[in-house]
Length: 268
Ligand SMILES: [Zn+2]
Image 1: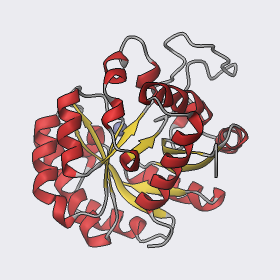
Image 2: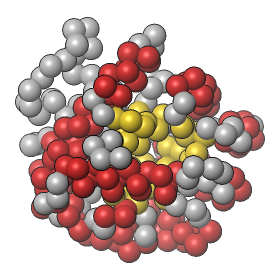
Image 3: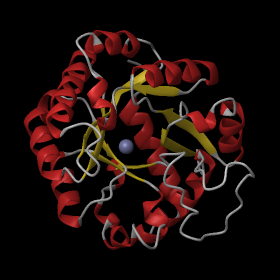
């Protein structure tokens, strides 16, 4: 198992990957990224990643990203439930609150997020959470529901040390992205990611967003896909996570792989 990585957030249904899915997955596997979680962000993308997961023997999630909460309607709950029943769909999300840009109003985001929690409880699946600039509201909602939920991961954690401590107190998992590699945006994280217990750590690229190369690392970027993040770059995330946790690269591979197995489960 040593040196095998798992990327828990690949947005493979994104248009920029259209027609290149196999190349992206092959590139990841060649670089030691053995497993990937294909993440849905609305009904169509949840359907698409479920189909891709089946095709490539991976797993996927189903949900509405808070940006897309405005598209939620009366039938959405049951439509998502149908997708969630598929065997390769192993989590509900990504869902949550993003008050950074408010593409959907906070009120709508809140309602839609609560529906996802209900879905996760009904399906007995983990919850894949996105939170940006909404820590207090998110923490309150999770605290209220934590006992009825299977596992929860707060993915792409970019907050403060205090908010990390509060999330960890709830027992949730934490996903770290290429922010850690970014000298401008992610520098603060380097001082305290070592407080995440070994059994709560997950890593991810959130590709095609958040390229760890944008911060000026060696940029060997395929022509025509400039600045695009890809799951194979998870290697860079893992290296920096290891460095700032004072752990070996191999050890980070081992614990994050094991956490992936425990979190998403082999069987429903
Ligand atoms: Zn997200």
